[in-house]
Amino acid sequence: MGAAALAVVPAARASAAIADAAVVPALVIGTGYGGCVTALRLAEAGVDVHMVEMGMAWDTPGSDGKIFANTTTPDQRSFWLRTKTKQPLSNFLGFPIDKSIPRYTGVLDAEEFAGITVYQGRGVGGGSLVNGGMAVTPKRETFGEILPSVDPAEMYGTYYPRANAELGAALVRPEWFESTAAYQYARVGRKHAQRSNFPYVFVPTVYDWDYMEQEEAGTVPESALAGEILYGNNHGKKSLQKTYLPKIRATGRVTISALHRVVSVVPASGGYLVTIEQLDTTGGVVATKQVTAAKVFFAAGSVGTSKLLVKLKATGALPNLNGEVGAGWGDNGNVMCGRANHLWDPTGSLQSAIPTLGIDNWAAGGAFAEVAPLPTGFETFASFYLSITRTPNRARFTWNPATNKVDLSWQTEWKQVSIAAAKTIFDKINSKEGTIYRTDLFGVYKIWGDHLTYHPLGGAILGRATDNHGRLHGHPGLYVVDGALIPGTTVVNPFVTITALAERNIARIIATDF
Image (tube, rainbow, N blue to C red; front, side, top):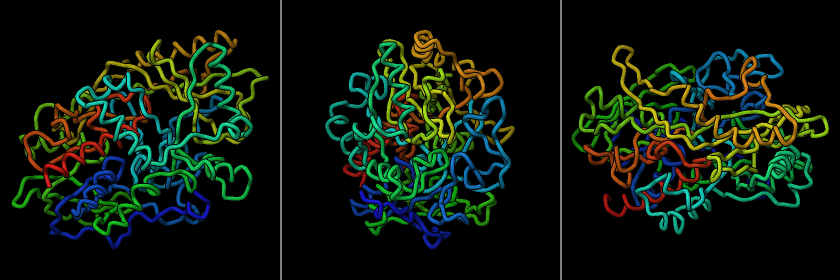
C-alpha cells in the first residue's frame, strides 16, 4: 500500500446518527473487531445494519493537524473522560509522568476496577485504534486451551486465514529489520533471548511495512517512528478504519452512530427496545433515544458487553439470561517489566512503536513476551516487555445495587502467577547478562506492572452464557460477537482470534437465523 492510500478513512459522520423511534433489522453495539466483522457480513448478506459506538468517529484533525495525539505528549485526545492521564508506564527515572488534561471523550479508556485497570479503545474501530498491532495466530496445539468447543480445523482452515487477510497482517522485511536503527531495541531483546536459549519469533503485525520504511527514509510523515501507538496512529497502522470499515461503508447498508451509548435492551414487539444515550465530548448526555431492533449483537468489548449484560439480567430487563453471564473473565495473563541493560547494549533513541518480536517460553514456562518499545526519543539502555502468561484465575462481573454499577471480583494477588511465569524468562536473562530489573517504571521500587491488562477477555463465555455460535441463552435474537466469548486467555495477543471467531460465528448465524 503506497503512502497516498494511507489517509485515515472517515468511519462515521454525525449525519448518520440514529433517530429516536427508528426500527432496524440489526443493531450492533460496538465497532471493534467483532462488531465490524458482524456488520460487514450481515450487510453483504443483504441485511441493513446500524452500529452504535460510545466513542468518537476519529475522522477530524485537531488544531495540530493530526487526528491522534502523540504517546510522549498526551492531550485531551488521549484519555476517555479523565482530567489526568493514567499511563500504563506511570513513572520514569523515579518521577511520575502523568499530567493534567481537559476532560474529553479521548481514545483510550483506563477503566478502573478493584484490583485491576483495564485499557480499552474508545472510538469507531474500538481496540484496533490503540493496540500494538501484533497480529498473532495461536499455535494450533494450544487452541484447545482457548476455545475447547470450537473445531480447530475450521478455524485454521478457514477463519484464521480469512481474519489475517482482512486485517492485512504481514511480517517485517528481514533485511530492513536487521539494518534499521528503529529496531535496535528488538535486536538487543533477541540477542538476550538467544543467549539464554529461549525461542524467539517474528510476529506479523497490521502495520504497513512499506510505509514504515518510507518513514525512515523521510519521504512520508512519521507515525510509528514518531512514537504513535498508545493513543492512536495517524498514518501507517491498518486499524479497522482502513480494513473492515471501508468495506462496511461500501455496502451502503450500514450506518454508524458515534458518541452513542446503549443503556438498556428489553424484549418488545418486533424484537427488542434499545435505549441509547447520545453524548457530547465531555461525556454529558444530550439526548436519549429508543430504537426497535429485530436482532441485537453485543460487540462492546469484553468489559462493555459483560457489564451491560450483567446489568440487564440483574435489573430484570433480560431476566432469562443464564447464570453464566458475567463469569469467566480473565486478563490474558498480562504483566509488564523492564530490564536495565549495560552501557554496551544500547537499545536506541529511535524506536518503532510497533513491536514485531516475541520470546516464546509457553511450553516450558507458560509465558510469551513481546519485546516492546520505549519510544522516549532518547537512549534508555532498557529493554521493556509485555508478557502473556498461563494463569487459571478468572473473575466475575456482578451487579452492585447499592452503587448501581457493575463490580469485578479480580484480586491483585492473582497476578503473582503471571509474575512467576514471566520470571521463567527474565530471571534467566538477567542472570546470564548480569543485568537487573528496572524499578522506576511502575512506581517507587516496583518491578512488575501487575496492575493492568490490555487484553480483557471473557464474561459471556461461548458455550456457557451462549450457545456454540454466540446466541445468548434465554432471549432469541440476542448475540455476543466479541472477546467476551473467549474464556480469559488466547495465549497470545487476542485480536486475530476475536476476528476469526466472529467470522466463524456470523457465517453460521446468517445461514440459520436470517
